[in-house]
Image (cartoon, rainbow, N blue to C red; front, top):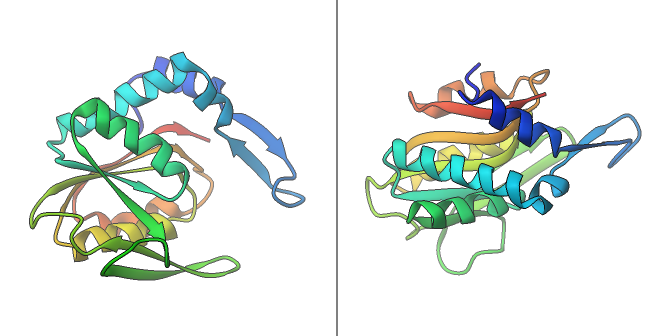
Length: 184
């Protein structure tokens, strides 16, 4: 499992993630990143780390997944001097889109990216808040490839290590690194 090389960053970020019991339903322990986002030191450290990783990987765009991935990816793209591309839920983007459906534990969903979001061969870092079962990120990686971009890496704020998301993504990464900043 690849995680951050900076234990102090992991500790800072993890200290600002709040556990909310029984949300959104009984028996679930929700990991709330709102306190992290509200803390200028922690949010700044996260943004700088994501921007640095994008530069190290040679990314030309940073992709954020709806919705909390937007909050992480957009400022990181700005800080790295790169463009930002949103991957959104079905029906939220104008114009022609590539679409990918995937299964959830309670049904299915569809994600979309605009067909002209990338130049052919553009190098992309995908950023999201949580890696759980891997379905959302897998669909997004397929969209990046379909849109003609080259995946250079995936960084997630937190990985739920007790789930199988990492294994599910192996065939979608095409050799690109998958990194997590906090593993719970």
